[in-house]
Length: 178
Image (cartoon, rainbow, N blue to C red; front, side, top):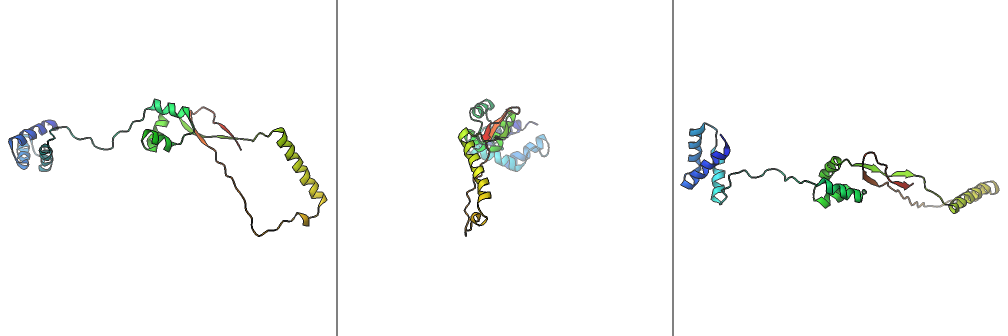
């Protein structure tokens, strides 16, 4: 039997002033054992007492948070270097949801491609002069003048990371100087 019809009967009995346990027993006698139980009938009677006579079930589970794929695609194509937490904040969804929708619109994450740094003419000249000076120093000066001693070493290490972009699978990533 359809549960909506059972709830209509429960509402009818509630309006008549019947007790929940008695109604559950009567429904089970008329429609067969285990059609309803005391707890279910009590739940619906409590709902009716609060003024809610809607006989449909309440929505269960997490609400579906849908992301408009066209809007997401427009945002990503405007700035393809956005990270997923930023996109998730824009759409107010989880990063996992954004990743699923990025996959649906055919975007993949690609690292920028390292390319050699292009030197201008002046920079090339300076490098050649430095190399020649080091070669001459090796032949002209003794070993003791090249030894440097100190008690501490300070090294600045700049570890540059390649940025990522959301691109179509066949497209070429951006280039960045190494």
